[in-house]
Length: 108
Image 1 (cartoon, rainbow, N blue to C red):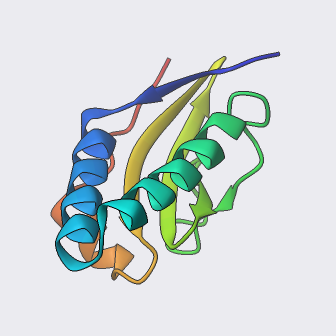
Image 2: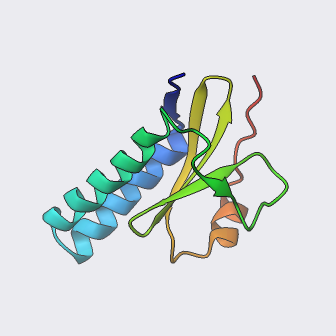
């Protein structure tokens, strides 16, 4: 069964922030490389939505993560949809990021 990937606005904003950072500190080519790998990892969730693993910071929740390059993609699966909540650099302090922007709890 194929799932539909849905980007929440928070994830879109995260992707723009990552883009700005990489382009400022590295090159456009570096950004395109990173974006390609992030996109590829996320698109795999259409066929394999449970490919990720539980978040160490939120072990008793239904949220999962995959890692693409040096980025964490935080998502949840509800029915036939995969909701992308957060995309962040794996080197960031994730607990601080969560405290600044709580994950929106979705329910079908």
